[in-house]
Every structure is written in structure tokens, then in C-alpha cells.
Length: 298
Image (tube, one colour):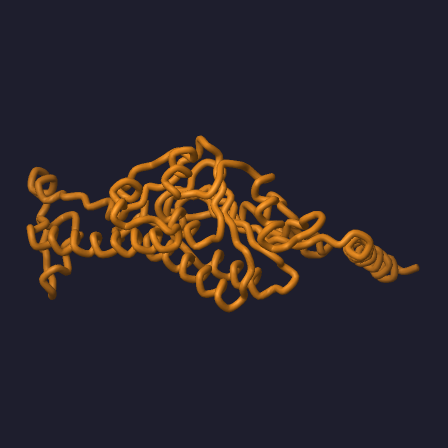
């Protein structure tokens, strides 16, 4: 045989090796599904400070539209979000629930606060450990540094040119006027009222008692349950029970998480993250905290 023929044979063997495992896995998976069918539940992990809604709204739409997915579970490890981001994900859940009705619940690990709680309030049931941190319902605008005196001390000149009375209200190198502060405070107050009203409606809480649960305080799971911010104290087993009750699931649950091809060999071999694999969870849980001046719910 010539070298070229050897190479052709070698690459053919590589292709056969690559495609055989996925085919076998597919056959085994189909056999298992027929022999012991499982109800599929989609899982989305929300972690850290969320400043981009796109990965979450896309996956939510995928799960809600998929008729094989009987329910959805949010695994919450979220300390907050940019205010618009949290509201967008909340709105997406509410709209998708109307169009594609299916249960969606939240399982908290350690923290479900501020923008994370805004998102969780859209779900049908919230479960958390008794020592988890829940709440922090409020709005703030961070990083409003005031540095004019610093510039003056170091003899740095700064020209503040603007068109529009409040255009430089958040400029750290320009002095903030009383009018600037009043404008920003009014904006935050309005956003806060929207947040509180939304939570009260979803959680069936009394707005007249909002000062007890919506003044920015953090509560542990036990306190949050007494206030009505969560539904029960528990863990994954509680979530499984609730999912089965709400989605009328009998038998075992098949957990479905976003499919992610992690390496070039995974791509060639068709290997992907399945169930609650680490790579898929990392992609959906990853976040980039963008430090710019905007209203935030954390």
C-alpha cells in the first residue's frame, strides 16, 4: 500500500471511532427511554451577578417550547442583577408561562437576593435551605464617586461640557447638584415601587406591610418563609416532589441542561454535556460583572 492509501485508511478509522460512540449512546438511550420512560425537566442555573439576560431568555424559550420538557427548575445562586436584566428575565418567564403553560420552580442553594429574587418571584414555587440568604428587595445606583476635590488637590483641570440639565449627573468629576440628586432619587424610587409591586402581586403579599419585607434587608430561609417570600424549606428532594405534583409526573425525572460542546474532540466525537454536567452548568452559571453606573437590584 502507498503512503496515501495508509493515510486514507487511518483517517477512515478515525472517523469510525468518532461516530461509533454517539451512535451506540443513541441506541442505548432510545432503548432505555422505551423500556423505562422518564419525564424530562429542564434545568437553568443562575449564578453570581447577572448583567446579560440573553443566555437565560434563550434557554427559557427553548424549554418552554419543547413539548418533551414537562417542567423547568431554576437553580438559584444569584446575589443580584442589573435592574433591567432581572426584569427582562422575569417578564420572559411570565410571558412564556402564558403561551406555553408548564410548571417552573426555583431551588435556592445559598443566595437568592435582589435581582435574583425578582426572577424567582416569577416562578410557581420557591424552595430554599433555612440558612440561605433571601430578599434584599431594593434598588441602588453604585459607583457614584465624587472626585472634584481630588482633581483640584492634584491640580488637574476638568471641563464639564454638556447639553441637557442632568446629562452629567453621574459624572464622578463634576459636582452633583441638589437637582441631580433629586432626579436620580426619583428614578430609583419609581423603579423600587415597580419591583415591590411586582413581588407583592406574584407572592400574594400585602403592600401595606412592604416595609417588613422590602426595605433591602436580607433574611435567612426560615425568616423568608414566615414572611411569605419562599414557599418551603428544603432541598432537591423537595423540588422533585413539587415538580412531580405540579407537572403530574410519575416515575423518574430526566434532568436536561443546556448542551455544550467543550473541545474540538467533543465536537468530532459528538460528545456533549448531558443531564447536570459541569460544563453546561458552568456556561449557564458564568457571568461578567460590568461596572458601569446604572440602576441595579443588588
